[in-house]
Image 1 (cartoon, rainbow, N blue to C red):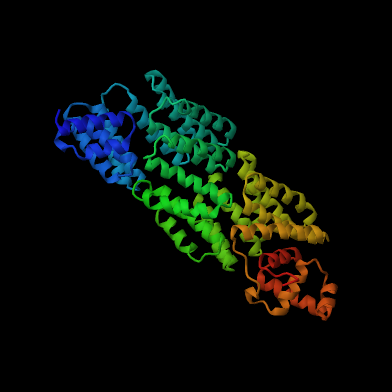
Image 2: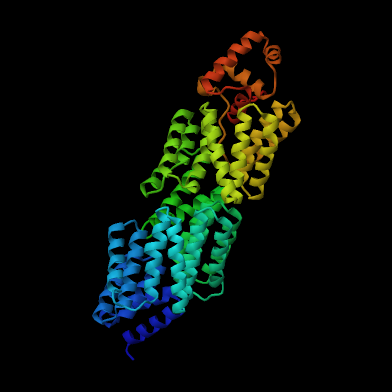
Length: 536
């Protein structure tokens, strides 16, 4: 046995053992003319797991030609379909659809097989889900399951269950849909599927949990995916996809250093094979930087946008941070229109729209946004959506000077965020609770909530408006607003500042106009958010 033949034998054995790093290294030193069609396909597979996408595309194309030359249309169709998937992942739709079309043509006249099922899943289940046709997607997913059972292919059955589950979730049947997702993952956890199918199902499941804001389930599946990936140390592709989801969870939980490091680490790698995930990684980076007041947040949103990710609502919230509430309101309203009728796509936009509309003095718009968010949370009933809806409802009540009604709603929202480990969101609710307590004359409780919020913001490194005179406020107007936030009446403010009640009212009128609020409660929240306190 010569050196080349020996390396080839070892490469084949390494592929069988899913040791892709060893397999690729051995294939690299074997002369190309010695590789069979099966070797080329196995070499391409090993290269893909290692993140060598250019080699993967080249080798799969060669494998497709070799399979055709050997009159093996089923194998040729499989490699053509895989090429289509990889090109689509890179954002190259023309080549992606071209290869998928070739796969379908190669299967003409061939008895139904596994490749037919994968193409059905790709062209009808996934395509209909992306087009917002969950009913058609569910029907195609059930056909995928039937074909998988008839052929004895558990991967097709699992893909079909997962596709039907996601379709039901999109239709508002969340409980039934999540059950199907979990059922599909039983097959994965039993180790009955090949690694590519398993990784695909892990990613679909986690992405769906994130989409519906089922934070608890998302966290659980990320942990299980990382355990699975530990058995494949060279799994660059799926490892990167899972890392983006981990970064999303770290962002929510206030683990901002880790979130940014994780996202930046995988963004460059994913740029070459999954541009959609690279875009999401950049969005996570932008969100961390916005929350910390880092001016480079705008550049990170641009990076996400350049890769096809809508930079909203983050970019609108960044405009709000820059004291541009009207521009921010316009931007988020446009984003809602662009999102179409899908309530899940609109939910995070509506959540941001509540805060932005209140800052812009548009309480009716804030109420409308909170109402739609409440309807979405009621329909899908997941932990994250319910926390978002409670936050929006309580915030609108507070903005309408209905502090007594707002208080229990905000306390419920704070509890929900705390249970989800969302430290920043819980602290932001504490600020609102402080305003509500002060409106009710409970200064002790208000001070406790402010202290709790400030402790969290300090620990996270969250941006806080520095004390000063924002929005062209005069020094006296800042003093008046600080005392409003302290729960003082006009008479008490006048006594503290040695000015008349009429002068206090005039300063308040001017300040309200400059900061775009219409009530003392809104003014109090503005003062707390901008570091204007009686002791400043």
